[in-house]
Amino acid sequence: MALQDQLDRITQNTRALVQPERLAISEAATAALFRSGIEDRILPIGARAPDFTLADALTGRPVHLADVLSLGPVVLKFFRGRWCPYCVTELELWRDLHSDLRHRGANLLAISPQTRRQNDFTIQQHELPFPVLSDPGAQVAALFGLAHTIPPEHRNYYRSILVNIPFANAGLNYDTASEASWTLPLPATFLLRPDSTIAFAEAHADFHVRPEPTDLLNLL
Image 1 (cartoon, one colour):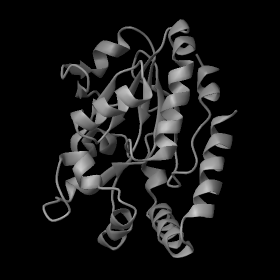
Image 2 (tube, helix red, strand yellow):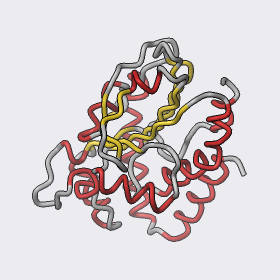
Image 3 (cartoon, one colour):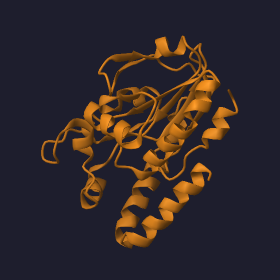
C-alpha cells in the first residue's frame, strides 16, 4: 500500500474516534501554520544543505553529515516524534525499503527534536535499521527552514490528547517547559548528493501529507 493511502486511513480512523471540537483545533493549527508561509522557507532543490553534527540515539556518538555524505547520497528524514502515528508509519515504510536504499548506494538519517532516550525508544519499538539523531530545539531543522513553535493557544490541545511534547523533546513537564521544547520540524524528506546539494525536497504544513518514498528512490 502506498504511504499516502496508509496515512489517509489513519486520518479516517481519527475522524471517527476524536471529538469534532478537538479535530477543529488541530485543523485550525494546521491552517495557521500554512498561512505563516513556512513552506516558502524550506531549502529548495539545488540549494546546498548546511553541514551539521548530531548525536546518534543508540550510541551517543556524534554523526557528522559531511562524513556520511563522503559515503554517497543521503536521505534526511525529519520527523516530529514517536507520539505522531503519521511519522512512525512513514519511518516503518522507510525501514521496509532500507535494504533497497542501501543497494542503491544511499544512507538514511532520521532526525527529530526528541531526547536521545525517546529516539532510542523509537528505534527499539519500530525496529529501525538506520540512525536516529536528536536535534535539540529543532536547531538543525531550522537551518533547513522547517522549525516552528507550537503557539500557546494550541498547546492545551496536545495536553488534552495526552501528548507531552516538552517531555518528549526536553524531559520537561508543562509547568517548566521552555519555548524551545515546544519547537517541532515540519515532517520533511530531503535527498542530498555527495556534494551536499539538494536533489529532492518536500515538506508540508499539513502533517497528514508526506512524499512517497518510491518517488525519491527513483532518483537514485
